[in-house]
Length: 482
Image 1 (cartoon, rainbow, N blue to C red):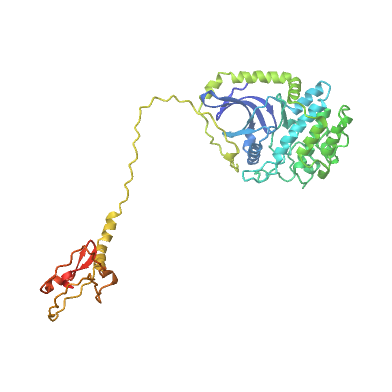
Image 2 (cartoon, one colour; image 1 turned 60 degrees about the vertical axis):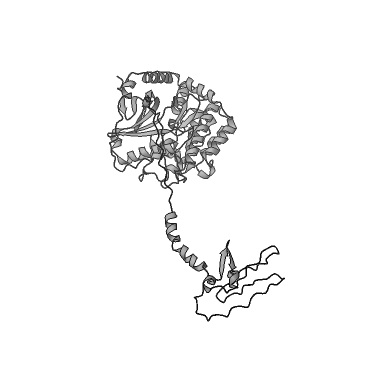
């Protein structure tokens, strides 16, 4: 009897499609607003491992590292969900099969995979590994990721003809929370490099190149490279290294692929390819570029029964009425706490969800009030107050000084004026207290001008104090005071 689907957060967990020692993989559905849904793969950590802080750290490190790697040949990690004592890792769903099952299917039919198909699959996986090796953190610093578990089980080949690397659970990286205990080996023993099984051996990207060489050897021959009755014999064979090229088990393998495989399987890391990309390019130079459609057709042929059964299950899940019920289920809050669990960086994965459609009611026209105008600052009152005392001061400074009247003795009357034919010229002599500006201009009367009237009697003193007047701003002296 099939297990009833359960809702975890915004995901519905359905049937199991794969199982391992640490976790199982299920088909799931991502449920969003307004009927949005997407088929995903959900990796579920076994409950008894979820209680172990080391396993929790390893599980979350896998999510963190895989989310940093962005490449078509790497299965992307979409989300991490915790519920109760369980952890769930949400990944993209790949319609296809693992390379290990495809090799086994070809072996059951009595032949090895075609050399160009096997080489193309391994070359794509190498491109994905190179992207992981080159991954940097949010500050641009290299993470120095080493997968350490490259095997046919962790290479998924889709019906679209694309090979993808999966499962970074035991990957080594800078700043990773989980670590390897003394005497503990992480990975699958038949695919480990000699330096990986030695105590204190240096592990770097060339370790993954060696493991990819083992995968290529087995994909070309459909047989195991290192085998034995127990782990001791397998460990001894790994340390001794491979001595037989793939063509020794499968004569159809071309010599170019023989040379590439044996170089990758060198016991000395310096004798191998410098990085995964160099090995991938060497394979592509040897076999050419294989069209993805040809790879996808081979995958569909090798796993036709399993793929057809899985497609029916997915179609039933997608059309199940339970989706509608689950879609109305509110999201579960993540209340589980795990000891020593490192925090997940929210920048690792950002997901945008569709906004719900809301019918808007017609709004009444609104009048937008204009903001009040700011009153200009008026400084003239202050300026007026400052100018008030300045005006009289300026008037006093510009007013001509008048000598105080002094008592003088009466002057004798002047002799009577004698008329002269020459025009008279009146020149004003400056007083000691007057300035040059106070001097009256010299005027020359014209012939047509009338002569000033003559006075028989001297002018009175009262009319000559002062002896000048102003006319149109010009200072003129009184004729009767001269």
